[in-house]
Length: 404
Image (cartoon, rainbow, N blue to C red; front, side, top):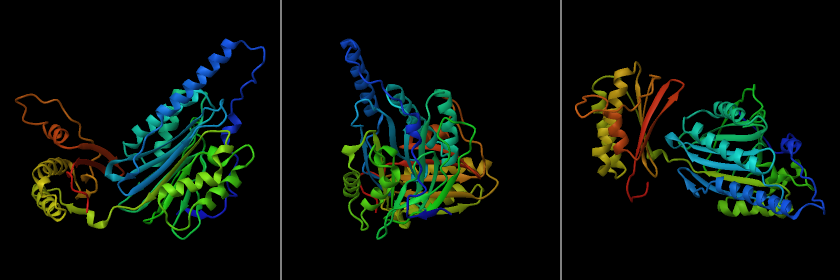
């Protein structure tokens, strides 16, 4: 079980500055052309950094977001800080913050590559410690000169659990209504790119109204303030009573005095609300021929309850296909789950580890059309391996009506 502790004494000096690149002061005798070239390189790095950072919505299913990227006030310190938030299969939410060591165009480019790699790995449904292991391998293939710190968390809005893993990054702060913010006591791990080390995941409960604060060291550490002091300022700036998340984000930035920074910084705040139990339906079916008919009846009742009967014809067709495939290969009971959020999500879980793959079909083919039909009719669909088998899922757009 994850431990919480109120102080910041466990924080250590940021590893970034041990690898910081120092630029030679401009010599009065330098050629004007060299100066203009240096300015162009800095402008390119800054433009690249801005283009690679996400524009996130303020709300995702079960989560409210507020975030900032703050470029350095030092013209030579164009860095590799990044953050992201993703809706994963099963309406889980992936949260990531990272920091490529060093500065300049190369660091900004490396940041973009790592952010893309995280997104790709996250959508495979990998648990946080496995994602960081694969990210470490990818980073070593991409560059033998860049290291990065990274924190990756996955929140399940149905179970109210959060799982995270850390690769050399500062721990996040968890703020609960009526309580001061607390640093999470989690294994630090080694930075991405070192290689040869395992990462550990930790899991903890999240209650509705809890806020997780992820950030890079540039937010809390300045030339005149060490990390421990900055962490205390951050914790103290988090409102003890629940206020709009954007206001809490502004309060943190005001307390940490961003004008005094000499490094770029990223801040990502996520407030959790979960998915109401009334918007979740779950059943277990025996892997028998009658399972498809049972699934259609159960689906129809749930859609009627959610005022989504207009989705029944398509949803029943697709769920029959998924259940039918599971019946062919499953040896244990099949799990069927529906989620009603911004979409209608249907998941079928069985104990077969082989993932179905769409096949090219011909006009006279009598098989292989099922997944093509799912791909055509669903808003999105996908497959993910689990420890006990696989999940095949699809989403349908519920239309203009909001989730109840």
